[in-house]
Image (cartoon, rainbow, N blue to C red; front, side, top):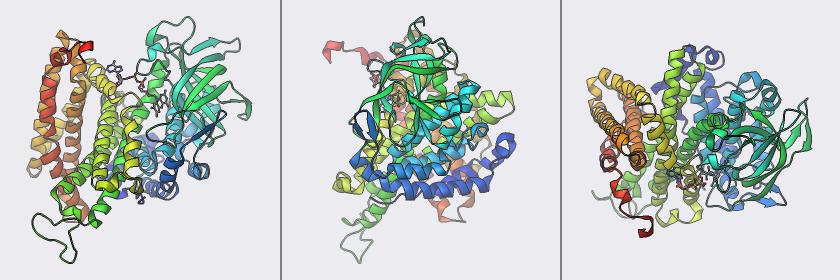
Length: 592
Ligand SMILES: Cc1cc2nc3c(=O)[nH]c(=O)nc-3n(C[C@H](O)[C@H](O)[C@H](O)COP(=O)(O)OP(=O)(O)OC[C@H]3O[C@@H](n4cnc5c(N)ncnc54)[C@H](O)[C@@H]3O)c2cc1C
């Protein structure tokens, strides 16, 4: 399996040249204290070493061996335990954690670059700590001071891991149906009983303790989503001084055998009267869990980019070396029996599609992270509110569009290898298998699309959308004439999105099926338009520096490919949105 090299040059381009992150950090006092451009670069360099040298070499063997279950215990593949022990020494789990409890307090803009490297190096390995970072976020935002000071420090250290326990056999998307119960105890704790399925890292052999965040219902809770509370349930009880006590009544009943991320344990978790502690308010558990889910959703979008980047790196190397047939314009490598396949238009189409969507996705995830940092650290209430609303709007796009594009492009990465992509040797098929789950978990992409259209666009009466559209319009209005080739199609795309949005808002008033019928294609049009904005921003920077370095020439060429070949996809998607719901209901259930 080829090596993984973190795309540091592109990450620095996005961070420093496109978004001028260090300037933003210097304006936010909590960040100004701990990070500047040099610190960020040093962290990225170190992250590249850890992911490329420690984690990537385990990706193939981890997939082949998989996680194993025996008598309630789960073992991770050979090498994971040692690598995890080395990995946590770098403090990576607490990279963007609260410094008050031992986190490093770094901005999310930096954390997303690190997460991409981690997922590219090995999705399964990455998941063991990704869930911890999300759990810490929910605990930090909603738990009592006593829980925070007891649990957060060892979790940030990576000595204890976090797990997210929502799903039950009969309750996936519709969490209002959960049956796990919580009963209040005299000492203020709760007894948690029920069974959860599909719990990532619910059991493993990497950490001393696992902290489960569990959704459950109190006996007198209202039915549906409004009756759900959130509980912290440790695998091993924790004494007041932080030392470990008795084993709690939490057990792993089995693990799943699955298509991809085979080294990540996906567990059935049984809670048999386990001791738990309330996090946040009674019956407000779903809202508290959303703190974690929003974080995880962006993280899963980034998992997609990581898979696509790894696939791209392999595919470019292969396309330069593999020789087959001659270029349509005549022989290029005259000293060889055939030309390298990178000369062929279709191979170039596939490589450029992966490159354009991966680099566009990288810029977009940084942009969303920039809004998260602004929402968390800005001292101005109006600025914070705008950023929060942008995060709410863009999170479902980041989760679903990034992962839809990641699956499409990892398939291109396999296709470039021909039959050699289908066999295991080159690692391309594993990347597809590992990437596929990103469209499903953390809420399926269909549900993300409903969230975008139903809750974020229609639900806010178009107000959240307006922030984004106005920002893009301000950019296009102020753009230099030299940028016309990028700005004009961006203007058309935003006008198209605007029209489609107002048309949909209107139709949704008359027919409740319209939102669900339009949502997936709507999200995709939104995604391409958002990437067009990212590519126009990147092109602006690259245009000014194209004489300095090949990197900028490559960037501009990729921008031109995006606008010429990928953005026009919005036209057929828009036609599908406009077609409405009628044709979806021509058959009754028996006629399928
Ligand atoms: C490998 C793996 C790891 C996971 N890790 C975790 C974890 O750590 N913690 C955890 O709690 N869960 C986890 N999950 C569960 C995951 O989040 C759920 O599988 C997912 O949310 C979908 O739920 P479901 O499988 O029950 O599908 P269902 O909810 O049954 O959905 C089936 C289909 O119906 C569609 N659908 C459902 N409702 C609607 C609607 N209202 N409108 C339109 N379409 C709809 C869905 O989009 C989907 O296509 C994991 C799952 C897997 C496979």
